[in-house]
Image 1 (tube, helix red, strand yellow):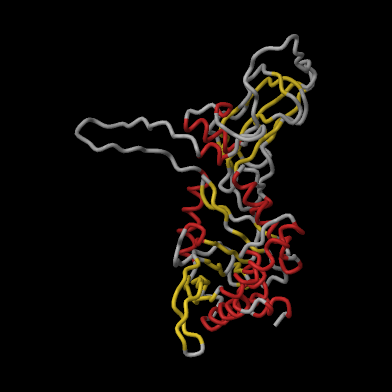
Image 2 (image 1 turned 135 degrees about the vertical axis):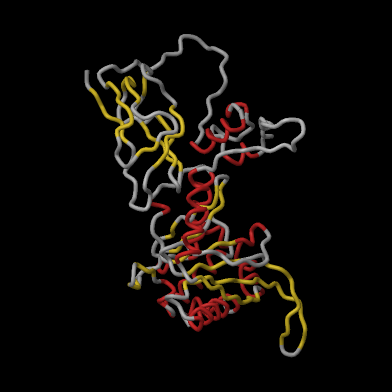
Length: 378
């Protein structure tokens, strides 16, 4: 007998523990190298724990729902007993197997849906496919004199988001300042080159790359807004790792684009597109969500006109983007209709003065209203 221990992954310092969601194998089951054994939920992401070698699962040490720490031993496999690869003796009528992510499997269990029955393209069922399916009616605990209610436990991610929001409000002096941006110039520029851009780079030209570039330019002028706090110290970062908020079925996550100051427009767009895809399919790693010196959240994709975003500690500021709406504005003494976006900068007033926050937004506004500034670095 040759015993191989199955361990929980190493968790970053910002993640205290994780919860085992559901085992896909039972003691005595054969496992193949790389096969997913159990889904693990942290307060940031859902991970898969896979078999390091082929063998037979002989013992489960941590059951569904139990909390685990970094590198905790959760199971054992006997690598000396390897089941032979299955051989198809004769054609049989079976359902085509489909690939699923941990998040999809969790949604399927919650909705009492078999993933293979869900209409999809290719060999993978995505969260988008699952969301098209009607949810099974909840089991309601009530008597006939009461109105119906449903009680469900918060996910780890939702609980962690709630905890961080409350802590941010309590531990930081959060203030928000606003400005408005005339989007006509950047919309005209995007419309002129979007077809060529997509043909050359294989990705669509969106507004996020313009704003991300403009944010970095403004951060370079006002470095304290790119700083973070640690006790009584202010840490000034000489790099620009920008968190881009992405909405998922389980809540908001903020993956990090690293060293954005040296990235091109196409690299930024590809990075954001990749984050969105992997967030949708629950394929983001803990490293993707760790760190960051500044964050951007775009409520405009949901129709938000104005909001006051909350800090993502230990960062000292966050930019909120909103919907683009045609509004009357004054130009050269005339009232004209222009596409306008309201932007909001929430910041920690303990580190950042109002003057710096206002000037940061003015710098951002100037760069977006005159995109040539981003090319000329002025």
